[in-house]
Image (cartoon, rainbow, N blue to C red; front, top):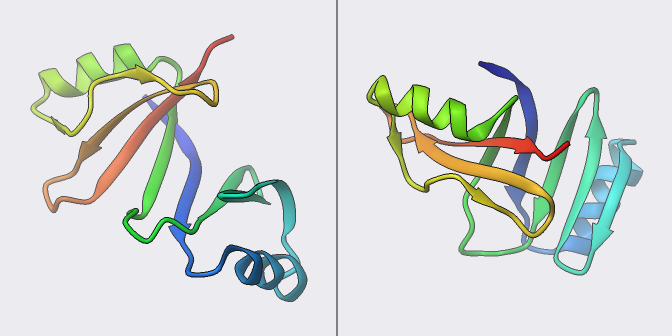
Length: 111
């Protein structure tokens, strides 16, 4: 069902400073940059940088179909924080927690 880790987004205190570190010091390839977010390629996944101080660590796990995965996991007793919903950036997501409260986000994209 879960195919791979798509993206891990971490919080940073200063986006420009963090971008410089990940790009120039660690040598990661920047994929995209906006005023409030940046992504870097790491193998076949992305590392996201988010300066939102109220945000949390986000681990996006790719599935073929969020709605089907949501239904299957919910039937198995998985606790969801959000129901499946379309995102402005083109993905469809649903957030769930593991037994220790760690949060994961199912993600798929329209073809």
